Image (cartoon, rainbow, N blue to C red; front, side, top):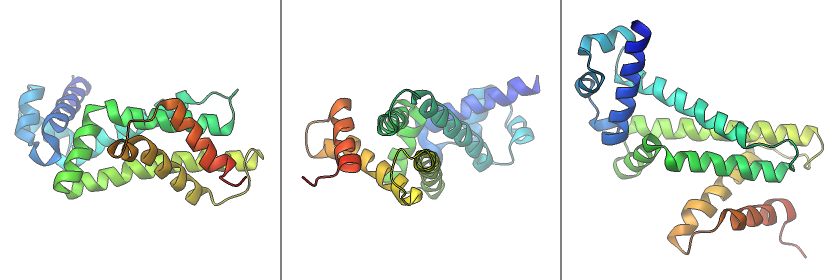
Length: 190
């Protein structure tokens, strides 16, 4: 069945990209892992880039779905932002493909990987921006530039989770939530 073959190819390519990275993955490897002829891949995908793009679009949709599931309407805006961002970053940490891509982007600077990383970040920023806009409209937070606010929230979160670990002991989820609330919602003024 064509749908099954296409899914087998996508799963094989995901596995190959996760193990070897984008640059080292070949269509021959994907064909071997999917147990199909290389020509079969080309009936579904024009090239490696198109196949990679389909996988990344699915990954972004899954990441967004995980963030949406983390949101609880009974909680405050800042609690939900924390929950959604924490889930997005945990998703990135536990998904083998994103781990490999971030490693390849950092170590090799592969252009296609850097583009995908930017696309993933843009998807996260867009998600946060939507939530900020809704919170402003509902009067839950002050009017602000939603794009800049989303950027600051995301970068602060990344700093607290990933960057801080290079300087000191990892922060707990509760500590991250408290610091996020302090810096963004309360401020440091006495």
